[in-house]
Image (tube, one colour):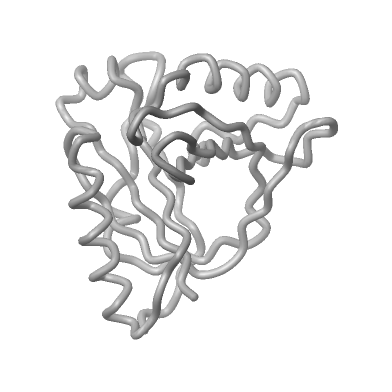
Length: 171
């Protein structure tokens, strides 16, 4: 198995939009990443056959809560993970710098196989299959897969790329 590396920065210092910076995708592609006490706050989104219905509202609430708790991550380490729980529900994990009182907190630890994909959300099924094949290279399995959509739709259009980092917890 590849030696796990500490999680690299998720973003570069290049930001042409004032919104989403250019993601640091090369450091995440086909790697084994070690997360150690990585903190997140969690909310759920409603879905219709895996298509999120209330993502904007949930993301705004996570941002508001993290800001009010003075728990924002440095811009280069922001990470928002999405995991489908069913065709009707997904969890959204928003990285924070400390525990946020009064909110559901999650801590991720362990080794994660990491791959980078580019394209539209409709390709997520293909990405999932590729990620699972990558996990098999380590003679491991996974039952916990997260997608990190690195830019909002407007920034993806501006940069001309819609990068998605997929993380699979190695069991």
